[in-house]
Length: 65
Image 1 (cartoon, rainbow, N blue to C red):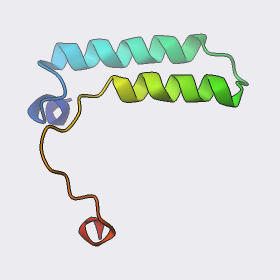
Image 2 (image 1 turned 180 degrees about the horizontal axis):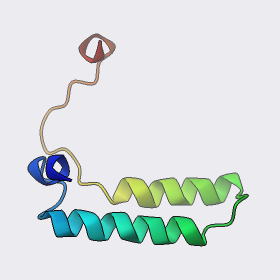
Image 3 (image 1 turned 45 degrees about the vertical axis):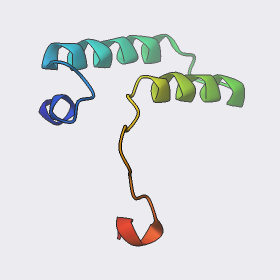
């Protein structure tokens, strides 16, 4: 949680914990077997829960190795 706060993803550790608990609650309510549309919707919701990088990010193949 400290890394999430330090990176600016959350304002405080409490906010990070609340977000994690909300995701856990949603996951617990999700059916065991889900279709691809449901998985895609849950992935989009997860992705939208993260703040965008407001700076250049080098995601080239060379930079990740």
